[in-house]
Image (cartoon, rainbow, N blue to C red; front, side, top):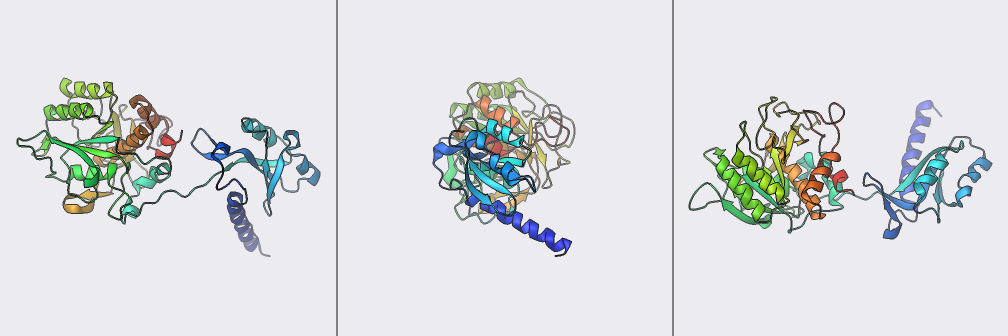
Length: 400
């Protein structure tokens, strides 16, 4: 056998063995819930089993000795990779200690938990394959745990929403126009419709796109008139959303210049247990945009499809997290779909994640902490001015 052929054979055996590890263990599928444990990263594994891989050429007697101290029971062997599934009937609650001890045995190459792999929920929305931002931020895995519910409301403080859009109308719970009398909360621009679809489009309905929080409802707060929103309208909308019971307020708007009215509205919402999320801004400079730069707001920067900082994204020490913002496919006026770029598109990913966490019964402070502390670190180590704590990771955030 040539070296290349031998290497190919080894890789093939390893791949087969990896699959066998999942399915040979009696507990891999259909395991009683009481035998499922969960690590700090949210990964689930069988609470009383370990997979031990032995050193090549380890003496048979040494192999047999492994686990005797803990009265382990050999469940399955995986031929070709010197691995064995061991069960520890009395090891539940101390499996980490057993794992550490076995790793010190000279006959052992590695010891792994018997992790449980499940297929990620894949919605049937036909444009879902174009929504790179959702898998990049690990929403499909998060949806295995929580998809939101109608009791969780995300208020979109924006240009309004096309409430006849087939991917939005079922999720619109309240709407109010803060710009004109008589009121007309319909979207005349398209920006709010696009942002709303990213956060909470109707999902798995065989139409268009998927939303980050598929089960969440939407509050429509129209504040933009003639291309801009006044602080008076925005503050009024934020307070209205908080008083109406929203758990999350999404503000994909902003500009330099702070006002007490806007800050006080944000603080009012936060004090009522509302998570406020806002766009960092699109001037590509180290300049503060408001309301994003306020302390009680989660400020969101934008990343590109390859995971780098978007050149248009504002930055600074006040940035909290990042999310995909370039080439984001979502809903548009008239019932269609299109692609837009900006920190406006990044923000509803974070709002959608906040919605998932609210559906788990978490408080506003806990939601913000989970979003920031579970983010995937990008750029310089730790929090930095370009990505904040990093790009959001929905699976980690909802994991515990």
